[in-house]
Image 1: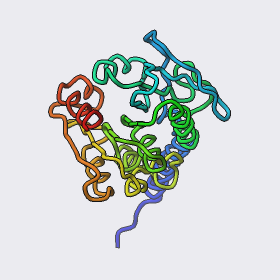
Image 2: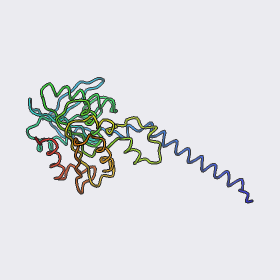
Image 3: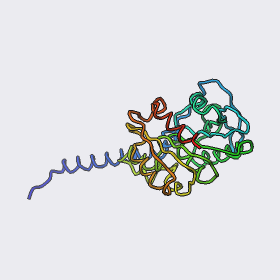
Image 4: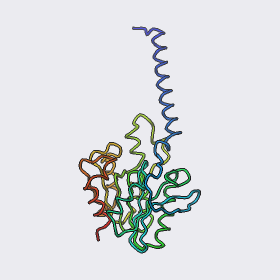
Length: 262
């Protein structure tokens, strides 16, 4: 029988203990820093018209193109997006629509701290504000904002919904990005769009990027399976990745088809 030297046994114990410490440190860091990993507040870089919307515990900046009485589009952006920079593109694509682009808490001139419950509450507050002057409301949610828009569409009456690089849940995205961590136990802001998709009745377009490595097309395909038959259609923008999808003509056409069709 081979006898393992005491020194070798001790070395294995130290290596195992070291790996355990690193694993626990990773879990601790994720638990402590996950919101700073998910939310990347951006300043306003493009001058333009905006309004101030008081909400519970914060004041939100909303970049706008006002058209009283016209159909309105509410836009919820990505986790590192300055939505004021998206406004000119939407002005070009939807000249006959009023536009309301929400700067999340901590983004732009909005006060407060971002978090899933706050973002959903703020989206509902913006919807209530807009419907006082607009009888037809449509939604766009991009990346992180797809979860905000999906939940809002599941709770309120909207005419149309476009979800850009959407996911079934942030939890599943995080599991793919951090497979060595117990993400399912640690994550707080799950943005579970799949759980609410079956309650959405508005015609919906899911727009994915062919080469998206952050929110992989599989996550969008899994989300599509949770809609009722006939509610959602999917488009994949060829050659696009997560960050440049908005620069592709196919994206423009898909967005217009999603929201401007009769």
